[in-house]
Image (tube, rainbow over all chains, first blue to last red; front, side, top):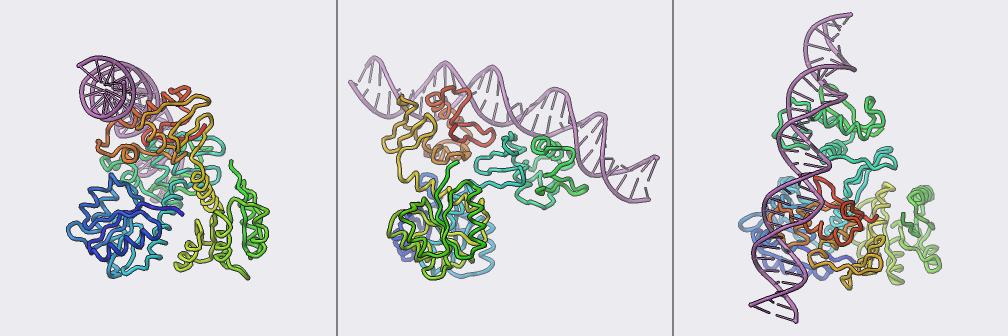
Length: 226
Length: 226
DNA sequence: AGGTTGTGTCATAGAACTGTGACATGCCAC
DNA sequence: GTGGCATGTCACAGTTCTATGACACAACCT
């Protein structure tokens, strides 16, 4: 049974102790804090595998802690709230939370959520997608065309990943500029086109008649499997 | 490609055949049964490496099969269910399942889960891993290259172990700084690079053309066996 | 203290990448 | 067909990134 290092932030001492005990019983190793500030101070040195944050906290609230964690890295976050207010859920998930649990919560359910998220995080790390001959490994950042490995430069790879993230969707140049480049570039340059062309030259068997990245005149580009 | 002996238990013949075919295509060797009783009868003689059990089975259900398997040994178990009911998940994980997959499942996703679990099981079982000529003993904290013992300094060893913990994955500098150092350092330092070079100088037969630790420009480093 | 080892920082060279703009080509409406 | 726009193509110089070795300093040992 796997054991996770859990960072717990909850200001109510009785709830904190209860959760800590319950999670410890489930075999997790738990470090808990009463405030977001303390948690953020220690998050780098403790390097937990998942964070469980109460939304209502004195000082920095859970949602804000979540945002700041997200700025640091991909650490999975579960938010805890006393009421199942719909607006809260939206705000929480927008802040990048992976899950949202309403108190009081059954320890077993919380444990199951934790494990589910950790599993998801783990499998996301090594997941591959294939579109016909084209295989993209997001974990290894490798692109294969048939048996051959394709070398893409960082920008080309980011562009391809962005397109692939929305298969079948037309993405316009402005969107791509923001997603792949810093927004510091002018919108009317040939930048996106040039990069698309470079990617095509590498992954399209016949770049003049693209199979993967299609031009949608007047709108942008669309990735769609052959 | 590693091949696993998979025990598959699924009562619906069409699903069973489809999964068996898909897993076989992925390079696994599969033995399948329609009922838990049959599976349990044969589990000792077949000695599979992993079991995939449908939860809904006539007679003994998948969760119960899982419990009985657990009583026998540490065989990893994946449970298959038609819907992602929370209660089911809890019960399944409590019964000792290693993973829980909701049908219908993409064959490559199932394959990824299988491999993840087998990797976990394997590395938990032994402290030593070998990648080609390189052998890493995590128990004794020793690294051998062929017949020769390689002396790595503590930091170098932590770096190598961190890379090896995620074989095939690209780890960025920020991540490595946190994982290997205590992140008392600025994000844009060349510290990681310098340490990677030192490790390469010791373990790579030809440091200029690394076989183990690969640079992924713009992203980070990737450990992948030759 | 003196020597040894480990570690972080820096400068630098060379390699790789990328934005840019000029121009070519293609597409569509009229 | 023709004009007007949208997109494709290309070369190259400036920029960014990485490898490498030197070095300073701290920690450690004798």
